[in-house]
Image 1 (cartoon, helix red, strand yellow):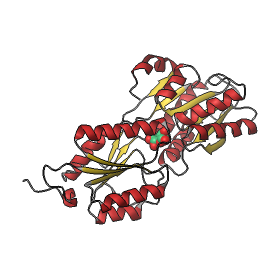
Image 2 (image 1 turned 90 degrees about the vertical axis):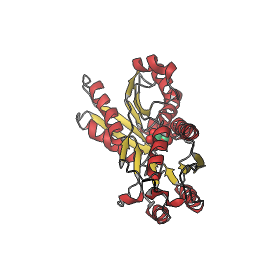
Image 3 (image 1 turned 120 degrees about the horizontal axis):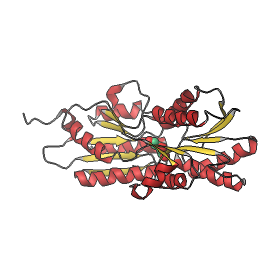
Image 4 (image 1 turned 60 degrees about the horizontal axis):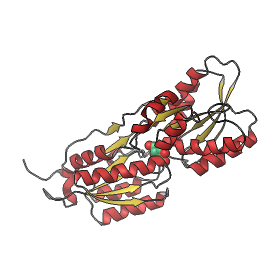
Amino acid sequence: GGTAGAGSAAGTSGGDKITMGFAQVGAESGWRTANTKSVQDSAKKAGVDLKFSDAQQKQENQIKAIRSYIQQKVDVIAFSPVVESGWDTVLKEAKNAKIPVILTDRAVDSSDKTLYKTFLGSDFVEEGKKAGDWLVKESKSSTDTVNIVEIQGTTGSAPANDRKEGFAEAIKADPKLKIVASQSGDFTRSGGKQVMEAFLKNNADIDVVFAHNDDEGLGAIEAIEAAGKVPGKDIKIITIDAVKDGMTALSNGKINYIVECSPMLGDQLMDLAKKVIAGETVPERVVTEETTFTQEQAKQVLASRPY
Ligand code: GZL
């Protein structure tokens, strides 16, 4: 025993601090800042030397960051791909440099599964489905059409693609439920507000907003109130994430239902990184545990929410 693990060719000898290069998407939402804090706090706790970059939601910046981590010969690279495609080249460079890669939060569509060791994050299709399932139940008693507008996440990102798919699948259960408009708000509050303003201008009768994250939903609330309507009553709102600001709006009745998407991936990431560097096998997929919240549940847990 005692031989260095296969993944340690990047120069870790037993007992050295592990160096991780983390290429973060940006700081676009409350979820993202909570995720960044989780990764940074967990690295400190785990004694991992963390190199961190913020790509301002630009893929080319993430690719540059990954290349710089390869140059620096870090022991492991982790990142949340802002969009699903366009990663094979840089991931092959990491593989050739014998630096293991861990995907966190978002997935890539590379067909070559040897380009990364594991993918840690939520099942976004399931999140979209949970949102749709709630609306199907909620709409059971109503007779006429339910007009839904959808504020999508970042175009091309796994959460946007998968949440859209899961929601559409779930609402097939009731033909009354119709998505009358769908557009990207880029996971930001300002994006959600702008898209909702356009939806309100072009659609006379909107019953429901399905926003792919809390921040877009909070932006939509601003637009709805500016139009003289009552969010949560005149227009119901369903969002995904369950960050503090979203849960506050939910407990105040301005949002009707939130599907949780946990950003607290730091501890699992550091644990997976240590195993990968030690050459241990890790599961190729680690799915985040998460739940859903009604307005009543939000009131009960709001004070104790960590982010
Ligand atoms: C989901 C994550 C998404 C969040 C948004 O895991 O990638 O990106 O839902 C964030 O709030 O911007």
